[in-house]
Image (cartoon, rainbow, N blue to C red; front, side, top):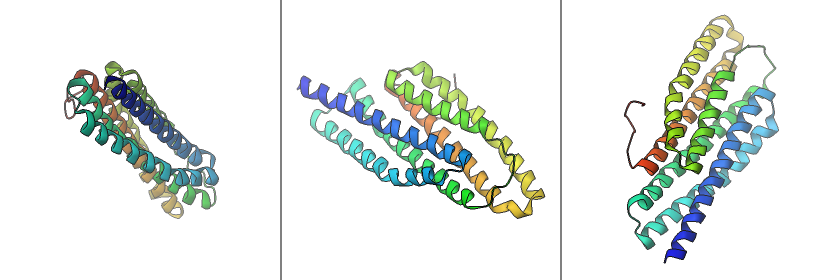
Length: 219
């Protein structure tokens, strides 16, 4: 049983790491499609979403099979539970990447307008949080996971800053309202990605320390 158990666990780790790599790439490509006005790149993200959904279902089925066959306890049980939750957050990040790609397709179908909206703070913060949360998962690093939790307020602050900028531009640029509203939506999508990255970090903390830190203040 030990050999089969170890093989099942290694396969599960491989699956969740592959899904995390795919989702992270989709998010980076979605942001790039906005920045570089790349419609084809945005469409490829739509096409890859079925693969994200398929892999999410495979991981869930594998977790349930392991629970039924091996009835794990203690840290092994925490690992399976955490993977189930992380799996769901990764799939939702994939959905947000598709949402961003959809807005990219629309924005890029319009005539270019110089709106001077600075997304760099949000996108850098979100990508850093996602990378750190996934690194924490790979390395089972609770300290790095706590850092992700602390970073969430910074991203929220950047989102608020850009929202204020967009509101001001809407008041002064009536002809670009639809595009500006889409940029506001992209802000929300990125903010949700940061929230999911925080969820992943909290699940890593649970996996490593056995403590549920959700709804607790950051250390």
